[in-house]
Image (cartoon, rainbow, N blue to C red; front, side, top):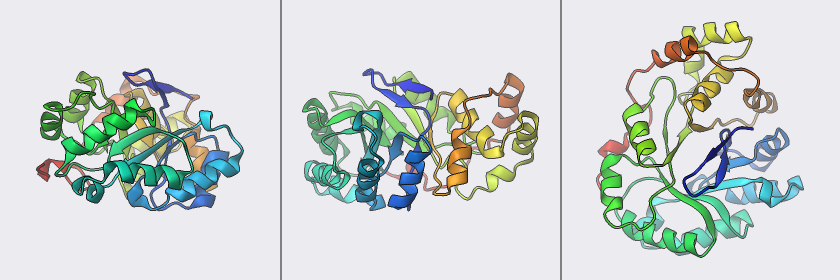
Length: 266
């Protein structure tokens, strides 16, 4: 497994499992296939399943990197600290490795101050945000003491989010990609990806994940299917060359598929 190193020194696997809509058995399958970076959120309503799957695995807690997120309602109601400990309780953990603000919204500065306290108290190994754009960072940076270490955003071959990615890297933040296959998976039928997959005797999904990693992007494919979980993990025995990377770069449409955070004012 290849690791990214956050600016505070925390090592994070470059490939994890996104758990939106997954249950305990599916998360357990992912652990069985070797996934140790697990991304969940209070809003996913499956933190309990994640915690149970980790315990049933029999694998040391120290081998995992667990990430969860603060939901908007708790941030707006100044309930950040209570919400965090509720997540911790559901996860059955003493600490989380990464804690993110899920979406920008009113109250980000107040919520961030509480997250900074939790970080300093040792309950969180690394802190960050999700779906933040430059204008949201502009507000956060005016009052924060500790800068975010991570920004998790929509990013895939059809939407490189390049300007934001470059900005985050300039500020020392690692970038994580949710929905690396472009949401519906139709991206994987793209002719360019199919041609490169044939060249390397890999799947289009494996090519896509490798593209992310070679760009330094931590990525979270989501699947509960054992065969796909195994296949998605099989991306460490080949490399894309410069021509491959350029061809995949050419797929970019510069249009996001999910909600556009740029439209959210805080």
